[in-house]
Length: 273
Image (cartoon, rainbow, N blue to C red):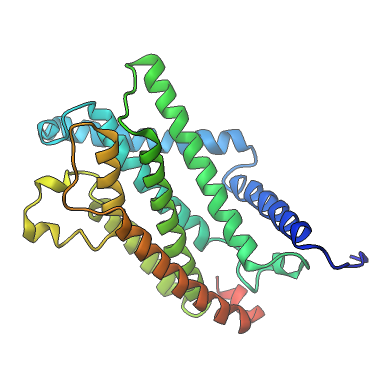
């Protein structure tokens, strides 16, 4: 409180910001549960349950033959984990501390640090859950074979980046229209249950159906991720660069809105959350 703020070098400022983001990320991971291990276990259990639901649904409906030739569970997980990562990081960023939050009263804290902390905390939980699930599947059931694992991880990162961009956009709108933000973000998450394309293969879609999904960056991420995961699947109807460009465009607009919102912050906004 009585600490004298002295000018820092660029490196010192960067290290200070990195430390704040680290502590903020730890705090965001512990938001779901006081014990970080239990929080990660709960997230992993939810992912496993979603994979199990899709596995049972595909088996009962006889749709396994429509999937990519290869490990059927890898096919399901390649869609489910990218979907969960995208949605969870968006939800975490929307729930980050805004400009009128009590946390902003502490001198080094600002909304950008809060956003980065929430995004990195969600990414940490999702990647750790992914590796744990794959390890358990590899050790107990059958060896995991992924054609280009680093490229698949890259598509996961692009899905995460697009989720951050959409989350920041909703966060910028939230103080002005909290009800619209809650409804809009819920609709976006529900729509992505189908529009993400995790339940079908993009190459098998007719043209009139493809137009219903190719607007979605997550659709491109999942389809390209499956192209890198399976040696015998070549995605023809999606692009690696499209979600990157869309994510950058949304993030630029969202940061402009967030900056404007921060300049007009009011303490009364916090009472409407």
